[in-house]
Length: 289
Image 1 (cartoon, one colour):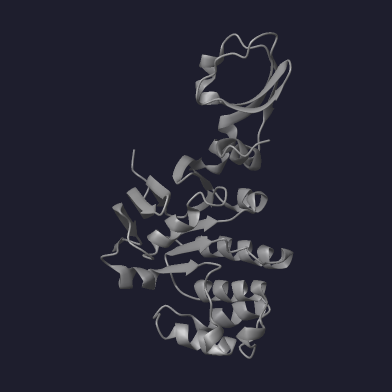
Image 2 (cartoon, rainbow, N blue to C red):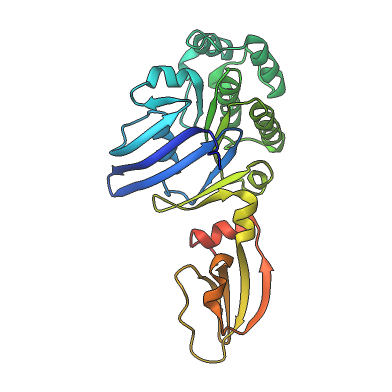
């Protein structure tokens, strides 16, 4: 079987910050994929994306992105990768046009006509004062700067923050337009799980600095079921892969990995219900009620 070509590869990535330990993490973004990186606040999503872009030095592991190593080929990599984060700020440039002209000078792959199209789409003008932009408008400006370039990879950390319904609609439509070109991949961190489920073909779930599940969106959703189980007596000893979602005096609600269903013989199953991405996420991260 031919291995799928990967545009981004993290191998054994590990990092320590204060009391937080990230990794070790192995993650690959196949060519043509949109991978949703999801997890609760503090799971390590931003740290992972920042390290991939060369913001900080990992304590261990390797990073290859767009065929280049990080940090060894950092300058060349950033020519081929666009990064969006809520932390980006441009107030010192005065007007939108000034920051766009400044950024364009660093990237041979800058596309002026595409930038003009995106400005109109996202409702911004080169004459707008950056100091007067709302938080959502500043997010739209960051997206314009990322999408107006000819790149191989988009690293998007919470790009929907502050966007209204129309802004999110335009963003997701542009991501599908971007990924239609060969040799590209997208890694997107967001809490908009319903929208991610519609556009992401892969999902990586993070918890406490680790990736606890990763795979195609369809396979991940189909892999798990919610089981309601009668509990006539003492609670049974369950495999570690089974998560308890809820307890009642004579009933258990379980999240079951169908790959391990053969270990659950003898349970009195009252109902087996499919799960959506949000429910799978809540179960895997321990946030299910």
